[in-house]
Image 1 (cartoon, rainbow, N blue to C red):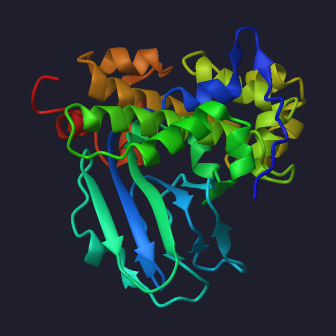
Image 2: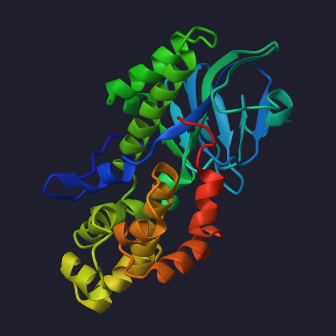
Length: 325
């Protein structure tokens, strides 16, 4: 379980890197469900293209991950967050036979809510689960380096009253048919998701690459510069100067901690912002290219197609809403 040690994420002026990484996360839909299960029970969920949250309100739950050496035990008040929707199994004990999640919930559209009850002779487990759909274009590149699962125990949630109270109130006041319930659930889960990520990131082990990158005295300022000033004419030499390291030392340290070269990370951030602008604005492609730091429209076009598999025009046509918002 994650403890309560606090991080010191590097800041520059009025900005801090953690806020800049989490601020763009905006959910566009949540499928949430309340489960009441009596032992014996076991459920197998495939990987999903969204983040997942499991909050145990009553009883216990065992989480088993493919390839993981040890199962994770969740008790009342514990919260598990899967940032990438990684496949996993849930049960009342390790090794329990499972049924596929799709057989119990074959259709899980964002915005919907369900209640599921599984009868049995044993102790009851009550859980609140959410599938949190977010726009991949709004996710900071470093998000992809997050662990497959975070677990915040009840003590950690007590140290974050807003997070703990949000999850407890969602579980206590479960409704799926009152007016405005979908919007309330969306905003509540969005708040819980960001608060949980912030809490989990601030308590990662020192040897986690994301922790080390966010707190490294040289890499962190460079990450913040890329995240907030991506449109500037950066070169490897300029980013190294921002970090206060030599060119070679900065490049090696950045790649070791972030998993990309500095210029690859910069390109990912620029194209992430370009994708957002293509969806949310009607600005011409040439203007978007300039806004995200490309001096050549052709270079922007080629880089975008290489990353997203579509030209900017194709991406805009297929991703923008078909009706006015």
